[in-house]
Amino acid sequence: MTRASTTAAQVGLVSCEACQLLVQPQSSTEPGFCPRCGEELEFRRHASIDTSWALLIAAAICFIPANALPVLNSTSLGSTEPDTILGGVVFLYLSGSWHLALIVLVASFMIPLGKLVALAYLLITVQRGSVTRSRDRTRLYRVVEFIGRWSLLDVFVAAFTVALVQLQPLMSVAPGPGVLFFAAVVVLTMLAAESFDPRLIWDSH
Amino acid sequence: MFRHDRTVAFKSGDPVTSPSTVARSPALSSGPPPEAVACPECDMLQRIPRLPPRAEACCPRCGCMIARQPAGPKDLPLALTLAAVFLFMVANAVPLMDLSVIGRTASTTIAGGALEMWNQDEELAAILIAFCAVLAPGGYLLFMLTVMLGARRTPAPHWVGEMLRWASHFRVWSTLDVMMLGILVALVKIAELATVTPGIGMYAVGALLLLLPAIAFTFDARDLWHRIEWTDRLHTAPIPLADTAQERPA
Image (cartoon, rainbow over all chains, first blue to last red; front, side):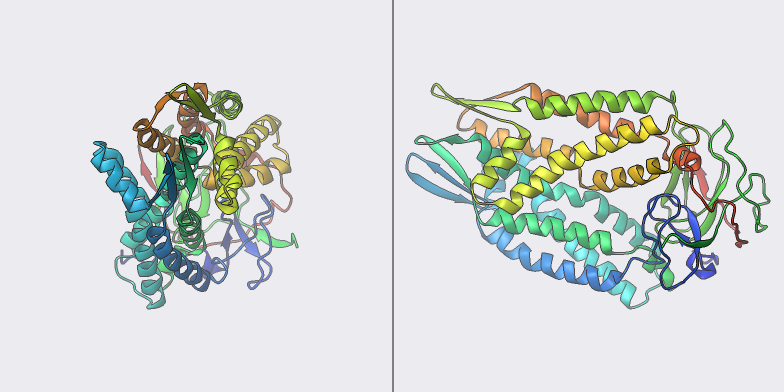
C-alpha cells in the first residue's frame, strides 16, 4: 500500500490495547494508564523486539529436548516403554487413525516449529526496517497468534492418558521429562508472540 | 498516575476529511456513533463507520478486523453466559470418562488430569493444565457474567470496564477446545488397551465449546465501552483523520 496514512503515534496519541480508546498522554515517555479501563498505555509494547527474541531463543532451545525426550512412559505387565511425541504420531498412524496422527503431527511438531520460524522472520524483517509485504507479514503474525494455543494439545493428551491409565499392577502410564520442555515451548512461544508488537512492522513506512 | 491532558472523541456526521474537535455525541439506539480509533495492528488512525448488524469494519492498510456489529437480542449474551456457567460447573464436577479393563475401572475429571500430573512430579505442567483448562475459562465466564450484570445499569459503572479488560486477558489462555481434542486423542490411544466410555462431563465440555464462541459473537463490547462511566471525557484534541475503516457486510 503506497498511500500515506497517519498513525496515532505520529500525532502523539496512544491507543489503549484493551478498549481502543485514543488517549493523548501528558508525557510521551510514560503514557500512564487508560482512564476508561485502567490498562497500562504504551505507544509500542515495551522492549518488544528484545523480549520477543529472548523468549523465542529460549523456546527454540526447549524444542530439542521436547522432541528427543519421552513425554510418556507406559508400563504394562512389568515392561516399560518410553513414548516421544513423534513416536506417538507413528503409533496413531499404525493403529489406523491416520487423521488423528496428522492432527498430532501438525499441532505438536509443525505448529511450534512454524511459530519459531515465523516469529524469527518477523523479528528480522522488523529489525532490518523492511517495508515490503507488510500486509502479508501482519497476516502471518495474526496466524501465529491464533494457532499458538493449539500446540498445547500434546500436554493435554499426556495429562489425560496419565490420569486415566492408573490400573497399577496391570498397566500404568507416567509422564516423561519431555512434557515439561514441551509445555515450556508452547508457553514461551505464546509469550513471545504476545510481546511482539505488530505495529512495528508498519513503523518503517 | 491517572492523569491525562486530553482524550479524543468524535461527533457523528463529521466530514471524513476534516479533523474534529468536538466531544462524542451520546450513543444512539442504532449502535455506537462513528468513532476514531487507531488500528491495533498497524496504528493507523481511522474512523469506524456506522455498521449494520453482523457487518465488520477492517483496517484499509493492514486488513485487521477492527469492529463487528453483533446482531440478536440484547440479553442473549447474558443468557448464553448463564448457561455456560452452569455447564462449566457440571463439566468440572462429574467425570469426563470412565475406563474399564477386565473388571477394573478408573475415571477422571478435568481437575483430575492436572492433579495426576502434580502427583507424578510434573508440577509445572500440572499448573499449566489447571490454569488453561479450569482457571482461565472459569475466570473468563465469571468476569463476563459480572460485566453483563453490571452493564445493565446506565451509565455502566467504571469497574465494569476493568472487569471486561480482565475477561479478555483470561480468554487468551482459555483452551477448552484444545483440551477436548487432546482428550479425544488420548481416548483413541487408550481404546487400544481398554474400554473407554465418555461421561456427562464430556458432553458438558462439548456444549461449552459451542457456547463460548457464541458469547463472544453476540456480546457488543464496543457498545459497552461507550456506556462506561469515566472521568476526563470532555477533553478533546484535534487529530488529522483521512481514512475510514472498510466495511465488510455479513
